Length: 188
Image (tube, rainbow, N blue to C red; front, top):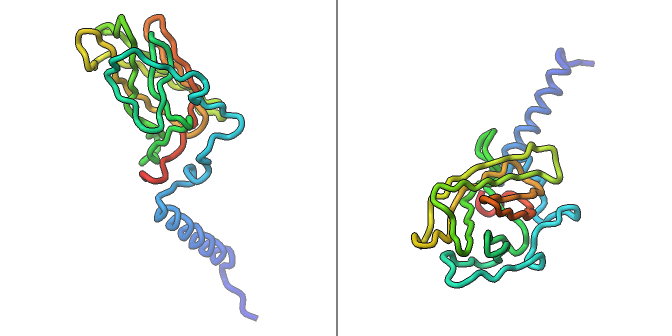
């Protein structure tokens, strides 16, 4: 009976081929192993902020239109628009260290508006995992109507997929909501 001289090498080569086939198929589908593990709908323990939690009717005129499948959330002193299903869809990170979700973040407020030179602080705490919390500070730099500074735009970068409690602070005002962050399978 003939025995291979290097049986462990044959097993390792076979495993390498199987791993290569799986990773090639994953890349061809545009998914990553982390992306494949994330479910589209929030799990039972992630109480995302929905319109029932307090849709807000802002004073008119509002310098920012409300997109489809979004609702206003907050008070006259600080509000934003959130997705009606509580889910934020982000791009799959291209390289290690990239955020799972990054986008512009619009904030509005009624009179008085945002002060020139004011800072907005956005913090996030993951509720379903061990990812470190994040803090971002944005300088107030944009407004559709210069006379009342009703709107400002900042950025938000969430480091990992999952259930996140987000808190926005501007001077004495605070706005808190929960979002389910998942990969946007259509955009990746």
